[in-house]
Length: 253
Ligand code: ADP
Ligand code: MG
Image 1 (tube, protein in one colour):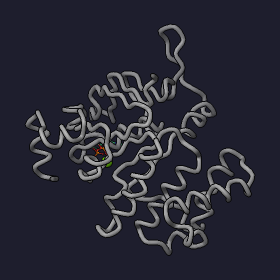
Image 2: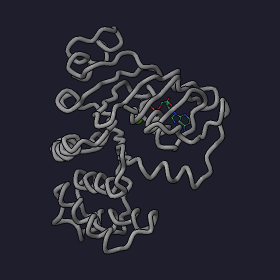
Image 3: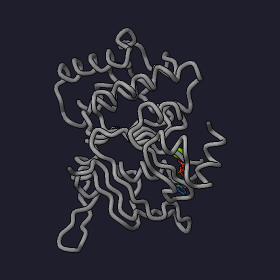
Image 4: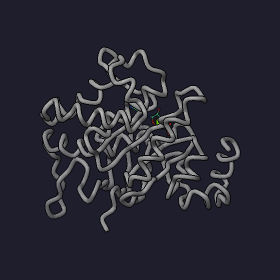
């Protein structure tokens, strides 16, 4: 079976700052893959490389069997054209800590925007899907509200619906609940749990260890640009093998 995401010796530097120092990992289709680690360890950078927001400096990164950003001929790599990169990006949904919604649009318009603008989809089709998705995230009654009128948790659920509107095969979540008031976190995690049950492949950067333990299929602990430890969430969280993992978990659990 082709991995949904495969990283082989991935390196990323910003100038002289070496951030990702040879990441190897594999995410299987339908897997909920949790990524944890201290601030600054390179978690967001790794997600951004998968989603073409950053270019890796060495190694190989594949999504669903395709090299991210390149085509390989023999042993040479050729950069993809912008239009080809856009096609690869369409298949990946990303949800950020800050929701990045369009404040001058309603929730419904936010969710319709990409299918109409990027795929050229008919508005009626996009609207019907957007209504279904807002219902799925528990916000059908907020469809006509401007997103600036919604709570943080509601905005994040709109952001998830917006990402799903492009019918991605992979969803990336970068600390989706870190900016939320504690009482709003549960609703967002419930939506993510539902997605997981529906078989979505997800990489989730999170400090919600309860979510990782209950919903995660795999867990990786990253520190200083390397994968320190990985395994089943229950095993890593209850019986960490490395001192760095133990020390990190003692602070967040
Ligand atoms: P994490 O998400 O694990 O907190 P990040 O991937 O955001 O870590 O950042 C890892 C390191 O890379 C940090 O030291 C950060 O300052 C640095 N970094 C991230 N993006 C850039 C950038 N565009 N330019 C320079 N340094 C960056
Ligand atoms: Mg981050």
